[in-house]
Image (tube, rainbow, N blue to C red):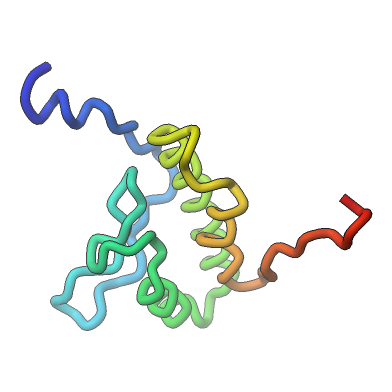
Length: 120
């Protein structure tokens, strides 16, 4: 392989888990706040995805369907963990950091709590 093919061969191939197709672009005609895989950065603002704008738009879009949002976020958490670990298994985000990033802010979740001293 030479040229661009060689460069792209270093990235893992995304798996067949949930496709990150939400949130919808807002306002219409603007770049959507969707992730670029396998890096999981926002294609609109360059921040780690889900960025603040994506979180807000997802909460609005799934306002009447919180269980659907929880399932969607959990599936993307699984996919991102796989992609990011394959890219950098030694210095990438920890599972706890990814859980906070993808799942903990969504519905039915509380942030992780460290056990009291002497219980862990």
